[in-house]
Length: 131
Image 1 (cartoon, rainbow, N blue to C red):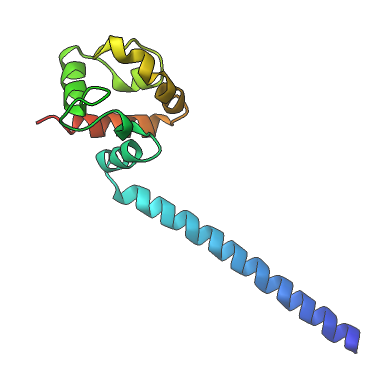
Image 2: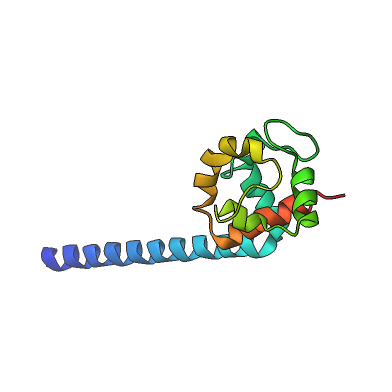
């Protein structure tokens, strides 16, 4: 009788643990998917620009620091019909300030690991800085 009670108790505990883990995982995925759906590409780009992209260490919206401003980048890429995503993938030459390209190498190693959606979002954010 003790074995039966112990076995039942273990089965109940195991069953509860499995359900709570599944619920937690599904809830987390739903939350992430919902957050992604609510953000525009520009907003996603801003999060990346200010966060994991580390872009703010060299670029500001309206002033040149180490690198050109995002307004200048957007303006020149628009004028020259350039593709920011292609550049961030490391598949095209620098057209804004080629003399500063060597400084950008470390961040290009990072941006090459980004998804196309992340790069397109960065491009959308940069282009949104045009006035």
